[in-house]
Length: 393
Image 1 (cartoon, rainbow, N blue to C red):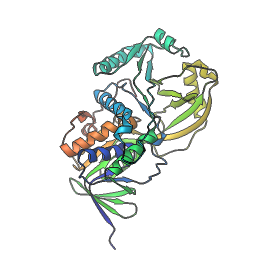
Image 2 (image 1 turned 180 degrees about the horizontal axis):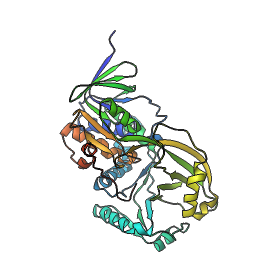
Image 3 (image 1 turned 45 degrees about the vertical axis):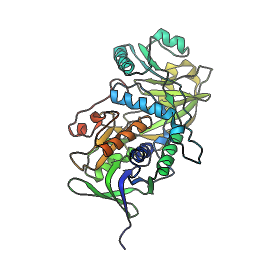
Image 4 (image 1 turned 135 degrees about the horizontal axis):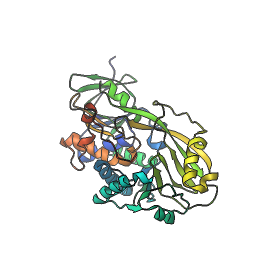
């Protein structure tokens, strides 16, 4: 018997928050388009979204990221009504407008000032704070070695689980078909993807294909002969409590990749090791908190000198090795029906709404309509021309 063949207009590879957002916006813009979302694990046990911290911020240096954040934050604020399905309870994402605080040493103050000026010019609410002002707002903070801070009070965080399942259920209600399976290979001609073969032997034929496979997107691209510089990198998240009372904090970030925020009676976050070996590794180094996170957190906030770590979990960043920014666009010089939306390097959840809308616009209308993401296209990879953030990770 020949293998079962499934036919669709669009096949989205990857059913995480970016893939589900893409499916939702395609069905919103063109309800008659037949969309399949191919996802190997509907429990999402190892999905990056469910292991994320849920942060959303406008504090970027590139206009595209700022605009995507502005749209994403507004979208998440109204998520319950936008994702509502008749006869079902509206999805809850538990948005917390806790703010973001980026702190820098004196030598980076001018850079921070330039970034804040751009953010303000683009309509963002961001306060530039001196060390003295930082100490007044956050009395537990050690500011002796700081030059400045940027506080964006309208930023915050949400529940990644609620966001993913809200998008997925809405896309399904709109008619997107979720196919359980892993893409094992692709059949292509000189200029297009002809079909996808799943690990159970089924064949998926689609006019358009979207690679939204997150940390696995580099492997998916390789099946088409596309060199996508996206690698999986392990990162840890920790929940810890202070040894003595201290104030609640916004999402605090520094240039050494320490990042944590208030969560209940304690804090959630950690320190990302950008030099960690690439690969699909979820094992936990239970000494990492004491060895790396605790010294950084206790230096910045002395009440954390006696911090206690209660839980550690691991997840994957889909790191774009070229420049840390996502690849969003069509492979115009290869398989013209292959679209990529991957490589967010830790920003996928917050930018999923804007990225999904962008791919839908590019696919259905032939161009980006609301946010011009041309500079995030695959062409910069082909030309080896990085377009990186300035002073912000």
